[in-house]
Image 1: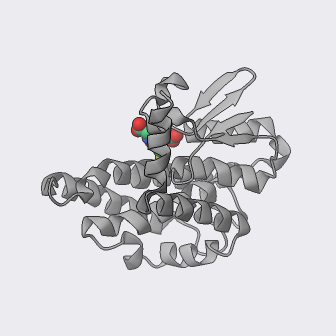
Image 2 (image 1 turned 120 degrees about the vertical axis):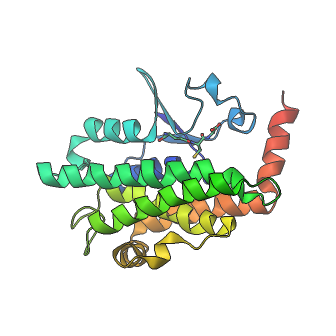
Amino acid sequence: MKLYTGDLSPYSAKVRMQIYAMGITDIEFELPASFYLGKLAEHSPIGRIPVLETDQGIIPESEVIAEYLDDLYPKQSMAGTTPSERANVRLISRIADIYLMNNIFMVLPQINRKTRVDAIKDLLINQVTRGMGALERHINTTGFAASEHLTRADCTLVPALWLCQNTVPMLDTANPIEVTQHVAAYWERIRTNEHAVRVLAEMDKGMQARLDGTELKQIEAARAKL
Ligand SMILES: N[C@@H](CCC(=O)N[C@@H](CS)C(=O)NCC(=O)O)C(=O)O
């Protein structure tokens, strides 16, 4: 199998963290040139990464890929065991995906102060703040995000919190993790987990490549090959 993935992409990082934690070693990683050219629809109609290529066809959407991996390798499944634990895993993963990452992605174009529309920024940041408030109420106060062991909830939440910490302040807004108690404590704890450490380093590397011009060179190289 092949995963179309990028270092900086939090949705891709979520799937990579699950792959590392499940000990799956036969999935090749690739960032296609089409990503830089805005032509990801050549690989998947949704036009976004991650995409998993399997012998049966492609699977887009991080949550769908995550569930597919759990179904494919039930012994290593990270979906939780009891019905209530599984519900918690899904809930934390949905909060991270829908209320945090999705709204943060929508607000990112407002980083540019010259073109910023304050009403759009405020609307979306309020939604991120609400999502963080909900996470504060639902997150486990000990151990991992949804239970006492590592689950898919952690794989979604780690990249979501990284995104929050590293991008929201660029909108001249305080990092919403700072006013939390349980989320902030979790954020400290999870950064000692080996799989979290690995994806966080990959995301830092991706951010560095964006800031130091390495990514721009890759885009230019992809264009030159057209
Ligand atoms: N709901 C999707 C979101 C994926 C997504 O937005 N991926 C971003 C990178 S993190 C992307 O491919 N953006 C390219 C684009 O929007 O053209 C998922 O969970 O996989």
